[in-house]
Image 1: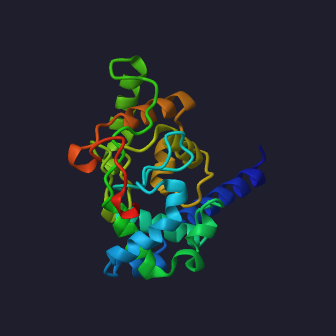
Image 2 (image 1 turned 90 degrees about the horizontal axis):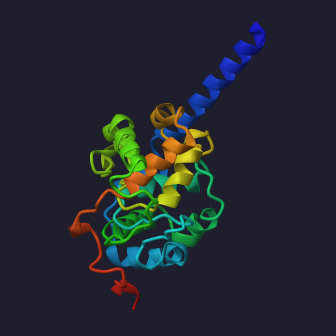
Image 3 (image 1 turned 60 degrees about the vertical axis):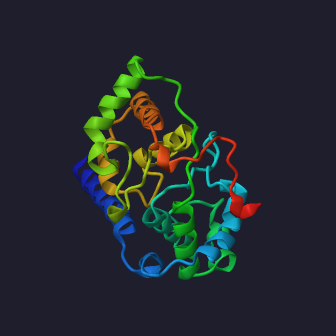
Length: 236
Protein backbone atom coordinates (compact mmCIF):
# COMPACT_ATOMS: atom_id res chain seq x y z
CA UNK A 1 0.00 0.00 0.00
CA UNK A 2 1.60 3.31 -1.06
CA UNK A 3 1.83 6.33 1.22
CA UNK A 4 -0.87 8.37 -0.54
CA UNK A 5 -3.31 5.48 -0.34
CA UNK A 6 -2.60 5.01 3.36
CA UNK A 7 -3.22 8.71 4.04
CA UNK A 8 -6.47 8.66 2.04
CA UNK A 9 -7.66 5.55 3.87
CA UNK A 10 -6.83 7.11 7.21
CA UNK A 11 -8.72 10.30 6.37
CA UNK A 12 -11.70 8.28 5.19
CA UNK A 13 -11.65 6.29 8.42
CA UNK A 14 -11.52 9.48 10.47
CA UNK A 15 -14.39 10.91 8.48
CA UNK A 16 -16.52 7.81 9.06
CA UNK A 17 -15.67 7.86 12.78
CA UNK A 18 -16.63 11.53 13.01
CA UNK A 19 -19.94 10.80 11.27
CA UNK A 20 -20.74 7.97 13.68
CA UNK A 21 -19.75 10.11 16.66
CA UNK A 22 -21.99 12.95 15.45
CA UNK A 23 -24.92 10.62 14.87
CA UNK A 24 -24.53 9.12 18.35
CA UNK A 25 -23.95 12.34 20.29
CA UNK A 26 -26.03 14.85 18.35
CA UNK A 27 -28.09 16.89 20.78
CA UNK A 28 -31.31 18.80 20.43
CA UNK A 29 -34.16 17.96 18.11
CA UNK A 30 -37.13 15.76 18.92
CA UNK A 31 -35.23 13.56 21.36
CA UNK A 32 -34.43 16.39 23.73
CA UNK A 33 -37.88 17.93 23.38
CA UNK A 34 -39.68 14.65 24.06
CA UNK A 35 -37.57 13.91 27.14
CA UNK A 36 -38.66 17.17 28.73
CA UNK A 37 -42.39 16.69 28.18
CA UNK A 38 -44.84 15.22 30.69
CA UNK A 39 -46.16 11.92 29.27
CA UNK A 40 -49.86 11.31 28.79
CA UNK A 41 -50.61 7.68 29.65
CA UNK A 42 -53.88 7.39 27.74
CA UNK A 43 -52.36 8.81 24.58
CA UNK A 44 -49.41 6.46 25.02
CA UNK A 45 -51.82 3.53 24.81
CA UNK A 46 -53.38 4.95 21.66
CA UNK A 47 -50.04 5.68 19.98
CA UNK A 48 -48.67 2.26 20.83
CA UNK A 49 -51.42 0.61 18.77
CA UNK A 50 -49.37 1.58 15.71
CA UNK A 51 -46.35 -0.27 17.15
CA UNK A 52 -48.22 -3.33 18.41
CA UNK A 53 -48.61 -4.87 14.95
CA UNK A 54 -44.90 -5.75 15.01
CA UNK A 55 -43.86 -5.56 18.67
CA UNK A 56 -47.13 -7.15 19.94
CA UNK A 57 -49.56 -5.52 22.34
CA UNK A 58 -47.44 -6.80 25.23
CA UNK A 59 -44.28 -5.19 23.79
CA UNK A 60 -42.46 -8.51 23.83
CA UNK A 61 -41.34 -8.63 20.20
CA UNK A 62 -40.53 -12.03 18.73
CA UNK A 63 -37.99 -14.64 19.89
CA UNK A 64 -36.89 -15.20 16.29
CA UNK A 65 -35.33 -11.74 16.47
CA UNK A 66 -37.51 -10.16 13.80
CA UNK A 67 -38.64 -7.52 16.28
CA UNK A 68 -37.04 -6.69 19.64
CA UNK A 69 -38.67 -6.71 23.02
CA UNK A 70 -39.52 -3.11 23.94
CA UNK A 71 -41.29 -3.73 27.23
CA UNK A 72 -39.30 -2.50 30.22
CA UNK A 73 -36.74 -0.62 28.13
CA UNK A 74 -35.57 2.78 29.41
CA UNK A 75 -37.70 5.52 27.91
CA UNK A 76 -34.56 7.53 27.20
CA UNK A 77 -33.20 4.71 25.03
CA UNK A 78 -36.53 4.24 23.28
CA UNK A 79 -36.94 7.91 22.45
CA UNK A 80 -33.35 8.17 21.17
CA UNK A 81 -33.81 5.24 18.81
CA UNK A 82 -37.19 6.51 17.66
CA UNK A 83 -35.81 9.99 17.04
CA UNK A 84 -32.79 8.56 15.21
CA UNK A 85 -35.02 6.51 12.91
CA UNK A 86 -37.22 9.53 12.21
CA UNK A 87 -34.14 11.66 11.45
CA UNK A 88 -32.72 8.83 9.30
CA UNK A 89 -29.66 8.50 11.53
CA UNK A 90 -30.53 4.83 11.98
CA UNK A 91 -31.50 2.70 9.00
CA UNK A 92 -34.71 0.81 9.68
CA UNK A 93 -36.85 0.78 6.53
CA UNK A 94 -39.45 -1.50 8.11
CA UNK A 95 -40.11 0.80 11.05
CA UNK A 96 -39.51 4.14 9.35
CA UNK A 97 -43.01 4.73 7.88
CA UNK A 98 -44.64 3.79 11.20
CA UNK A 99 -42.36 6.12 13.15
CA UNK A 100 -43.12 9.24 11.13
CA UNK A 101 -45.08 12.16 12.67
CA UNK A 102 -48.00 11.51 10.31
CA UNK A 103 -48.24 7.98 11.73
CA UNK A 104 -47.79 8.56 15.46
CA UNK A 105 -47.53 12.33 16.04
CA UNK A 106 -44.83 14.74 17.18
CA UNK A 107 -42.57 14.95 20.24
CA UNK A 108 -45.48 14.76 22.69
CA UNK A 109 -46.62 11.48 21.15
CA UNK A 110 -43.06 10.20 21.37
CA UNK A 111 -42.92 11.09 25.06
CA UNK A 112 -46.27 9.41 25.62
CA UNK A 113 -45.51 6.12 23.88
CA UNK A 114 -42.01 5.55 25.29
CA UNK A 115 -43.21 6.22 28.84
CA UNK A 116 -46.02 3.72 28.29
CA UNK A 117 -43.74 1.02 26.85
CA UNK A 118 -41.18 1.39 29.64
CA UNK A 119 -43.80 0.37 32.20
CA UNK A 120 -45.01 -2.76 30.40
CA UNK A 121 -44.02 -6.00 32.17
CA UNK A 122 -41.36 -7.96 30.31
CA UNK A 123 -41.59 -11.36 28.66
CA UNK A 124 -40.83 -14.01 31.32
CA UNK A 125 -39.38 -16.31 28.65
CA UNK A 126 -37.30 -14.31 26.18
CA UNK A 127 -35.52 -16.02 23.30
CA UNK A 128 -32.22 -17.47 24.54
CA UNK A 129 -29.03 -18.82 23.02
CA UNK A 130 -28.39 -22.56 23.00
CA UNK A 131 -25.67 -22.79 25.68
CA UNK A 132 -26.82 -23.22 29.27
CA UNK A 133 -24.84 -22.37 32.37
CA UNK A 134 -21.94 -24.78 32.88
CA UNK A 135 -21.04 -25.15 29.21
CA UNK A 136 -17.71 -23.81 27.89
CA UNK A 137 -19.54 -21.39 25.59
CA UNK A 138 -21.53 -19.95 28.50
CA UNK A 139 -18.35 -19.48 30.54
CA UNK A 140 -16.63 -17.78 27.60
CA UNK A 141 -19.57 -15.43 27.16
CA UNK A 142 -19.60 -14.60 30.85
CA UNK A 143 -15.89 -13.69 30.76
CA UNK A 144 -16.24 -11.64 27.60
CA UNK A 145 -19.16 -9.77 29.14
CA UNK A 146 -17.20 -9.03 32.33
CA UNK A 147 -14.18 -7.86 30.35
CA UNK A 148 -15.96 -5.77 27.72
CA UNK A 149 -19.57 -4.93 28.53
CA UNK A 150 -20.06 -4.36 32.25
CA UNK A 151 -18.79 -0.79 32.28
CA UNK A 152 -21.63 0.38 30.03
CA UNK A 153 -24.40 -2.19 30.35
CA UNK A 154 -23.97 -3.02 34.06
CA UNK A 155 -23.47 -6.26 35.97
CA UNK A 156 -26.94 -7.50 35.12
CA UNK A 157 -27.47 -5.92 31.72
CA UNK A 158 -29.47 -3.08 33.25
CA UNK A 159 -27.96 -0.36 31.05
CA UNK A 160 -27.79 3.34 31.93
CA UNK A 161 -30.72 5.57 31.04
CA UNK A 162 -28.78 8.81 31.51
CA UNK A 163 -26.16 7.74 28.95
CA UNK A 164 -28.69 6.12 26.59
CA UNK A 165 -27.17 2.66 27.16
CA UNK A 166 -29.96 0.12 26.67
CA UNK A 167 -31.28 -2.45 29.07
CA UNK A 168 -30.20 -5.72 27.43
CA UNK A 169 -31.34 -8.25 30.06
CA UNK A 170 -34.38 -10.10 28.78
CA UNK A 171 -33.74 -9.20 25.14
CA UNK A 172 -34.06 -11.90 22.50
CA UNK A 173 -30.83 -13.68 21.53
CA UNK A 174 -31.45 -13.58 17.78
CA UNK A 175 -32.15 -9.86 17.81
CA UNK A 176 -29.02 -9.09 19.84
CA UNK A 177 -26.81 -11.19 17.56
CA UNK A 178 -27.99 -9.23 14.53
CA UNK A 179 -27.48 -5.85 16.19
CA UNK A 180 -24.08 -6.86 17.58
CA UNK A 181 -22.93 -7.95 14.13
CA UNK A 182 -24.17 -4.75 12.50
CA UNK A 183 -22.46 -2.61 15.13
CA UNK A 184 -19.20 -4.57 14.91
CA UNK A 185 -19.20 -4.44 11.12
CA UNK A 186 -20.16 -0.74 10.84
CA UNK A 187 -23.64 -1.32 9.47
CA UNK A 188 -25.56 0.51 12.23
CA UNK A 189 -24.93 4.21 11.74
CA UNK A 190 -26.16 5.42 15.12
CA UNK A 191 -24.07 2.94 17.11
CA UNK A 192 -22.08 4.15 20.09
CA UNK A 193 -18.51 4.63 18.79
CA UNK A 194 -17.11 3.37 22.10
CA UNK A 195 -18.90 0.06 21.56
CA UNK A 196 -17.64 -0.20 18.00
CA UNK A 197 -14.06 0.08 19.25
CA UNK A 198 -14.67 -2.36 22.11
CA UNK A 199 -16.03 -5.18 19.99
CA UNK A 200 -14.27 -4.72 16.66
CA UNK A 201 -11.98 -7.71 17.25
CA UNK A 202 -14.75 -10.09 18.35
CA UNK A 203 -15.02 -13.22 16.22
CA UNK A 204 -18.43 -14.63 15.35
CA UNK A 205 -17.90 -17.27 18.05
CA UNK A 206 -17.10 -14.57 20.63
CA UNK A 207 -20.18 -12.62 19.57
CA UNK A 208 -22.48 -15.62 19.86
CA UNK A 209 -21.04 -16.60 23.24
CA UNK A 210 -21.41 -13.19 24.86
CA UNK A 211 -24.91 -12.67 23.46
CA UNK A 212 -25.87 -16.15 24.65
CA UNK A 213 -24.74 -15.14 28.14
CA UNK A 214 -26.68 -11.86 28.02
CA UNK A 215 -29.84 -13.62 26.84
CA UNK A 216 -29.65 -15.78 29.99
CA UNK A 217 -29.16 -12.99 32.54
CA UNK A 218 -32.15 -13.34 34.90
CA UNK A 219 -34.68 -10.52 34.79
CA UNK A 220 -35.86 -9.39 38.24
CA UNK A 221 -39.24 -10.91 39.08
CA UNK A 222 -40.83 -7.52 39.65
CA UNK A 223 -40.12 -6.57 36.04
CA UNK A 224 -41.65 -9.57 34.28
CA UNK A 225 -45.24 -10.55 33.56
CA UNK A 226 -46.95 -13.09 35.79
CA UNK A 227 -46.86 -15.74 33.07
CA UNK A 228 -46.13 -16.33 29.39
CA UNK A 229 -49.89 -16.21 28.83
CA UNK A 230 -50.21 -12.64 30.18
CA UNK A 231 -52.20 -10.36 27.87
CA UNK A 232 -52.07 -6.59 27.92
CA UNK A 233 -55.40 -5.48 29.45
CA UNK A 234 -55.20 -2.11 27.69
CA UNK A 235 -56.13 -3.83 24.43
CA UNK A 236 -58.95 -6.13 25.53
